[in-house]
Image (cartoon, rainbow, N blue to C red):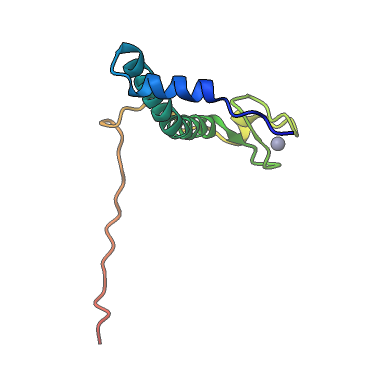
Length: 113
Ligand SMILES: [Zn+2]
């Protein structure tokens, strides 16, 4: 069984697209907007997913005993090891200006023959 061609709707769409008027312009704007949305939406979703994954990965903690990755928690849900005891987090209270970086001077010997 073949569906009849909807000539009425095709003619109506052609009329709306070709007719110079607010309805035709609105339809063209609408189609353009939908096309733009369809093109940009995957990109936006990809960027949002990437940022979300980065945030999630920053909050993930890996147990040093069993290697189980879990979200920000005090105790490993797999083996029960306390994260505070097994992996002390670097203190974030130290300002960058107050931090001291020890640089060791190493004499480089001339290795050219
Ligand atoms: Zn564990």
